[in-house]
Length: 253
Image (cartoon, rainbow, N blue to C red):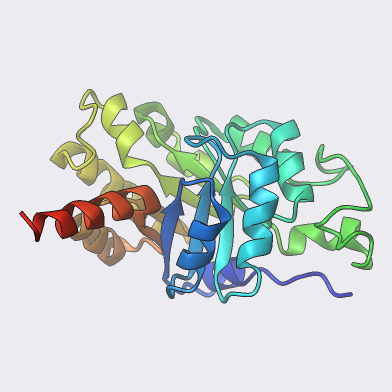
């Protein structure tokens, strides 16, 4: 059996814009509904949700028949947690709260087998199709896509160094945490925060490193796309559900 290809990684390498949706509801039925809605990628969040590796493997199986790329965010830049998600078959990871080039290198090591990294070796996992993928241990990194999240003022000051760490495939900006770091908690669309992110996207564009973002501010997302952002999450499943429910109820008031 061949090593499964990572369409998301290939798209970023060819500078194709990828439109995604954030998935925080730990329910495979929700994931299945959204998988058929035409998004390029879905981000399954285990940092700010109750989902863990067991739920993630269910999500990956659920969306596998659909033409959408799953991305998984672990709770932390933790090699044990990252190892579980990779063994579950995740090929694209978004690592939260990366503050420095050193931490970016640690994330790279966590997704890489020895002698160049620290990922533990297990031959019979979903990632290897239970041993059916020939040469998985020597070829896995061809299709693993590592994204790191910059979400503080301090991390922004280290952006170039973080982005240029070998093995980092993209950098994601988190407006909510950046807003808090800038002293504007709860204001992810504050003009200073938006400008800092747009400046950061420009830095990454000049370096040739894909930039990503999540925001519910659609005008800001269009600005980010114009600035060069390539992987853009345009909404959150729970937010979509609540807004739609409120609007429909309002129609009957």
